[in-house]
Image (cartoon, rainbow, N blue to C red; front, side, top):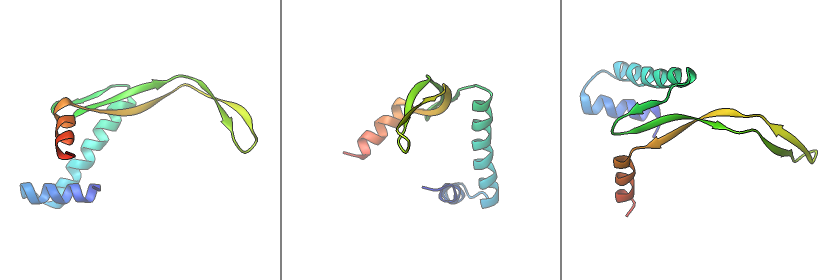
Length: 94
């Protein structure tokens, strides 16, 4: 599902203008990204958690030159769905 499809579905289910729905969806995404850039986790009750996970430094390999290289420690975003979300997905795949 794309952002445009999400906006269209919100428009159909709520009756609000597509432009307003697009603004709301984009602002939600911007708010989540801004909070995570500040180092905050985002908790959406009944949906899930957007967390920042620290990856430790590790040694990798440059396969073109066959030489080792150090991949520095870094933060990555992670989404952890809530229990209800996971249960709904399990039920829909049975």
